[in-house]
Amino acid sequence: MAKSPFPQFRQDAIHAGEDEAERAHGLSPDIVMASSFEVAPGIGFSATEMDAETPYFYTRWANPTVRQLERKVAALDGGEDAVCFGSGMAAISHLWLSRLSAGDRLVLSNVCYAGAAELAHDTLPRFGIEVVTVDTGDAEAVASALTPNTRLVHVETPANPILRLTDIAAVATLAHAAGAELVVDSTIATPVATRPLELGADYVVHSLTKYACGHGGDALGGAVIGSTAAMQRLRQDALIHMGGTLSPFHAWLILRSLHTLDMRMFAHERTALALAKTLEGHPKVARVLYPGLASHPQHALALRQMECFSGMVSVVVRADPAALAERIYSGCSVFSYAVSLGKSKSLAVHIPTEDLLRTSFRLTGADADAYRAWAGDGVFRLSVGLEPADLVIADFVAALDDV
Ligand SMILES: *Cc1c(COP(=O)(O)O)cnc(C)c1O
Image (cartoon, rainbow, N blue to C red):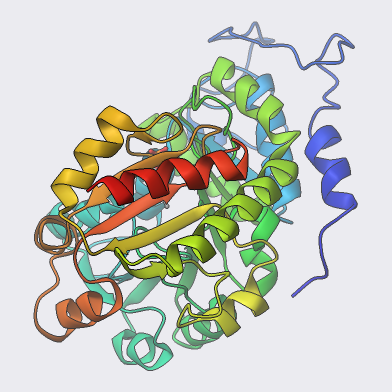
């Protein structure tokens, strides 16, 4: 693990990617909304003829504002290059569909973002792709799922919604020994906490909608980061042909937000840790899951792999979840009852275990039992915002006390 990325991170967050020759010397990047560009005659029409020297031509392929964001996210994650997409799910689906073919196997975390889980379970098999889900926090389970036809291993760490971790270096070694590539969805960690490429991952995926955009949560976006060759292939194969392009305006909003990413992440972490410690002692709380707590089952791994524990806290309540959800919705002044995460505003949402196991994760038997042993029922996922810590804590504790 590289040492703390600062102060280089601080420098890159503000300056990386923004020195494009195209920009008109403003201190803020230009938003180039053009969908097409005048080019000298003779440029080919096929994506197969595109290379790094191809000029801006059509924004679905590449755009000067989006390119600046791609360079910045690549720098922050320590990657050679990146490709940005219109959402985190577009990043995941384009990457999977460009790497997987009929007969290949995808090994996936059995707990991960519900959209990714459902895409894997419902869509990939229609193309003859085999999907096997395992607890990727368990290296032996990963090892036994790897077969000669395994092309990709996709993990999310920390994983939605129970904040289970995966040892990236250990899984990278296993995946590579089996001839597979490792994808790490690092949306919750962000490059402030973890830089998966330095630990051996082949691709990092982010939903830029979350902490990267942060602020009001006003733009959707996604990114894949990896080697120059892999990103060139992804752009040609996936972005140009499947078309999940990021709007230059959203790229500009996210570029601006990244200037403060590390400062926001450490502020989220400070309040999340204080809230998690308070809730651990609350009589209506059965369990608090936060990688920064000594009680987290993988706290030792968290200390090794995360330089910031991020702002997500999952809390298992001993109260009627429907009543607590209603109380948060109608009575909280700091927390909004809403999905998504990583905003300046604090968000809380009930994640019903039975529904999630059935509709998204499709877990049964021992895997379902393991999930329940970890998280149980009455799970609320809290995305701790940037409001003052004492207000955040008082607002949630008052809601718990009332139900
Ligand atoms: C939100 C999220 C996604 C999907 O991102 P969108 O931008 O909403 O499409 C993927 N992975 C994780 C971990 C997420 O939190």
